[in-house]
Length: 537
Image (tube, rainbow, N blue to C red; front, side, top):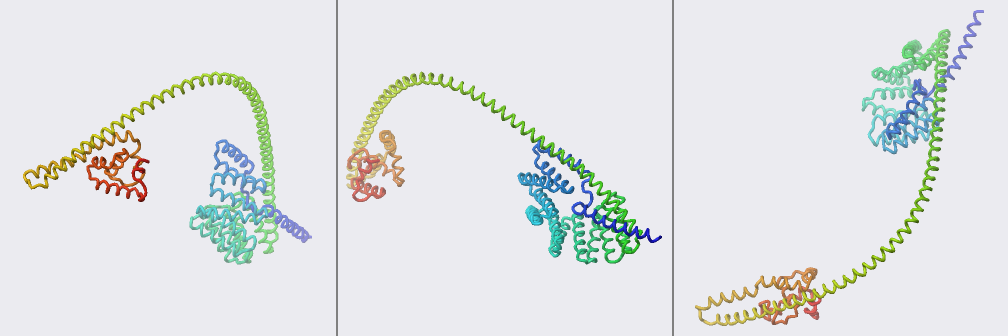
């Protein structure tokens, strides 16, 4: 009779073990503990913040709210809703070119695709996030993505790649002195060593992880690592040490009221006691694990129900808002079209009436304008005739003035030339007492030939008669001396060679030399006529 209860207990024990393993799978990754204590209320709060951010045109806060709502939906297992939030956040971050937030959002989407069994898409998003973090030299973000890629390779049993990425992430976390990040990487490395059954290395990594978690006072993570250390002891046959560690973790889980860790610790204790053959203790802890797991499942189910209700209400509100917005737009379009129709009719009437008035006014104005234009043209013709007559008279006057001035200058220079010739002849005689006085007279005569004041007056009158003549000479871009310009001006007046020589105070031979040099400066060939060229200016 005593064996029957034990037999019944054994059957119950194995049933419980079966249930526990199935229930624990419900809370496998990413639901490693209750991440959001009140996901439904958190989602509503974030939704209100998001709407306020949109109304204030705060793009950064709007994107952050969407990304956080995506994380909540992801942690609750609503992948499609989470992906929708992540993609909206992605568009905002890309629009404002916030590369740090964009990389973080890409990494979160990569994790979502990974748990949705879309590994290729997940890896592509991780790679993009890693490249972006590196481009902005964000060591913390880079280390986080490296750790995720390492975890990705671990689950594919590609342990060499997993070790490479985890160790690279560890070096980066150490370089920025981020202890929680380094602790997580040590925990990941311990998990890899445990999969490879290298329990000594696994224990070293878990101990380093625990030390860092303790240093940062991360109690929840510490519970999980202590429980992992107990699991290592159990797998290596050190059941007593393993049980001690699992009980320590269990006590911490009770203190922190973490149901998930309580269920995990009691399950490991049940397994350890079963291996020791202490089936009563195994049954006790397995029963506790079952109870905690059911509580976790019940709590999660309630939260899921509440969360789904919130999502449903949000969808309803979104649909209502969209419908109201659509109705408002339709009403605005109808009202706008009606108003536009009335305005078009009114404007058409105003336009027709106004057009008729304008036509009559334009015709009257055109008639008056034509009459005024006719009078104005007649007046302008008279004024032009008077101006032309006046200009002709002025030109004739200036021509006479220039001719008189030139003739006067020629006569003066001719007298001076005669005096100079006589004086030169007298100087050649031997009357030395008169020689010095006569030389002074010759010098005075030479200076009179080069009278600059007379030439300036000549230039002024000449330019009034022959406008822009000197400008055309400058346009030739040839270096002409003052003597060259005077020679050209005298030739322009049709003076003969003897008069030009007298005006310049030089001999006929010197004049021929001057003309020859001027032809060379003007690059004239032998057959070209210098006078014709001057008159063409």
